Image (cartoon, rainbow, N blue to C red):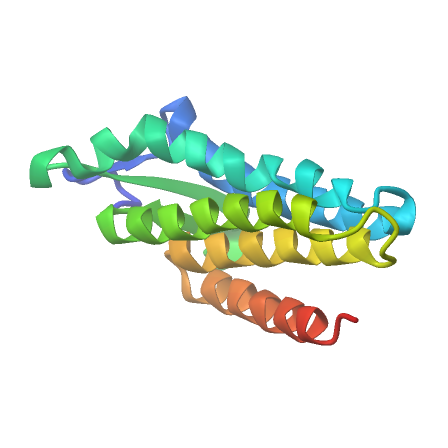
Length: 171
C-alpha cells in the first residue's frame, strides 16, 4: 500500500512528489484568475494560461525516468491529510499509465494554447474567460488522471463536467 510506503511506491517525501498537487492548484488558480480578468487580457490569456500545462510537461520530463525506469519504476504518490479524524485524505499517484495520460493532457494543452494565441483576433470578446476555462479543464483532467481516492476522483470528474458545459456554451 502506497500510504504505508511499501516497496514499489514512493510517498510524498521527495520535493518532486509534492509538486503533483501544486500543478493541479496552479491550473485552477491561474484559470480562475484568467476568468476573473475578463476581456482585459484578450488572447494573451492563452499565452499566460500556457504556463500551467507547460509546468506539467516540465515536471513530466523530469520524472518520467523514475516512473517507468525500464518497467521497474516507482509510482510517485502524494498524500495530503484533509480530515484525519474521518480518515479523509487527498491521495494522488502517478504511475506509468497516468504518466502517459499526463503527457497527452499537458502537451495537447500547450499546443491548444499556442494555436489559440495565433488563431483568435486581438479584439474578440470573452477570450479571458475561454482561456481560463480551458486551463481549469486541463487541471481537472490532470486531477482525474492522478487521483488515487474515490472522493477526489469524483470531485475532479465533476469539475471536468462543469467546465465542459461552460466551454460548450462559449460564444
